Amino acid sequence: MDEAELWRRVTADGDDRALSALYERHVDRVFRHAARLASDRRDAEDATALAFFELWRRRDAVRVVDGSPLPWLLATTTNALRNLQRAAARYRRLLDTLPRAVDAASAEDAAFVDESAVALLAPLGAVDRQLVTLVHLEGYRADEAAVVVGVSAAAARARLSRARAKLRGVVPGDAALEEDSA
Image 1 (cartoon, rainbow, N blue to C red):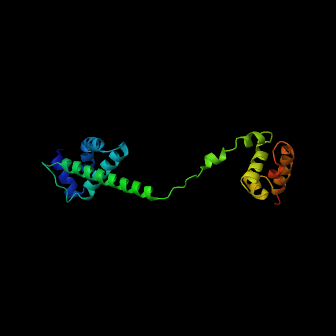
Image 2: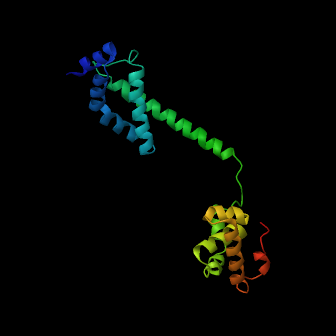
Image 3: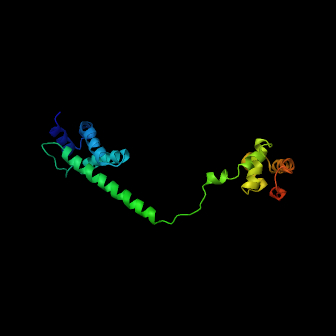
């Protein structure tokens, strides 16, 4: 079926299969056009999708040339890219106006600041190490940490007491391992 007939079916009948045939016929050409103008592949893909969406949405107002909507698609793709680029520039300007935290450490940095803590907790089993970490480093109460590791509150307190005893003399400044009141 020729392109003029496909376009007639799209506009007159709202035939989505005819639109699909036009899409298959022109998508590569429209994408190549977008890729030459775009700053990255995602923008080219977005502009191509937008052009075909607009072709369907505005099918009654599309200006065809020699029975083909391709010139309209190419112009619409160019405009879509310009809009995407303007939006990205506005977003970058907005981000540049926002205040930045100067010395904000990421959670990853904070977790690995003192690698010696990992070595100090090495003598403990996995559950005890998790309990000590939750209570003494993360600030949870013993009963809250018990829920996380899946033991009773009494078991958590007993395990923490044994872990503290095991770590005394190894951990500098025993105050860091004072008994938890919970």
